[in-house]
Length: 136
Image (cartoon, rainbow, N blue to C red; front, top):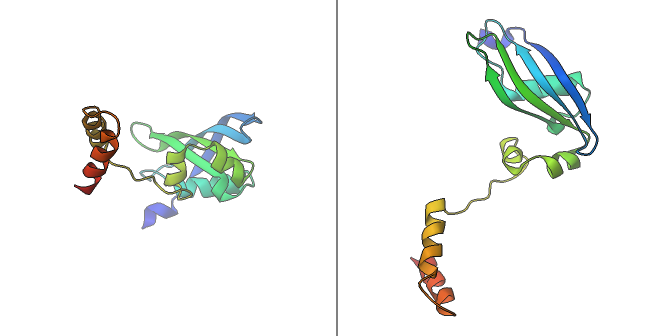
């Protein structure tokens, strides 16, 4: 695929050192002419190389391609350590990067139905009805 070989230019702006959250945060402008867009994995690798950080401490998100293509803008966070990355990054982004496992739970509608069914009982009957629901 020839598109992957096309040059990509990264520019960072609004750079901020956030000591409380143990990270560097910035807006990233990506110039990618003759290419539809750039993968987040490629961007993480380039940013880690640029700022001399480990790839698994870099988070890239919120990418928007400009109308007409050729330029995208997004947000990047570079954490000081892997521990800080796991502590401060939202769980859904950790799942995206393969650091954490997605929590499987019943659908929202099923949870609401179970809650409303349990309202019809009093006392220990609630516990019994919940166990009956699980068996079905």
